[in-house]
Length: 161
Image (cartoon, rainbow, N blue to C red; front, side, top):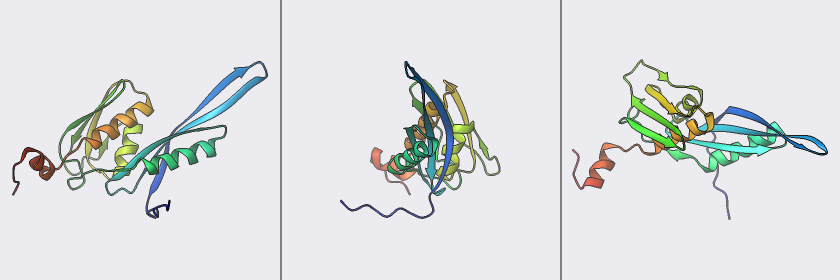
């Protein structure tokens, strides 16, 4: 099976690295997990989670998964078309479009997903858990739920002019 060529302009950032220790009778063994966000800042974004015994390996696994999970987000200029809720487990993220000049008002993990999606003006509020992994996934779920006017009109059987 041939692989598709990757676009050159994909950027990545590490949102969180977590260290985990397992205690056995032979001693402590450490492993690391990494949460990574990738995107082209033009409407495509993905998140990945990787685990390994060393940090670089965990990051590489996460980047590989994030590139596989990339999704296209509909944008309206430099913001989102409408307000939306993103839910993942106990994390609820409210995403609201903002006028030009507002900037990104979001927490660290939600900000990374929004920034790499190419959104420049947005207001967000996180409810429930503040776990960075769940917040990032809830933000992505909210962005996936966005629809353009044309898509909504097509679903309802109404012609938009």
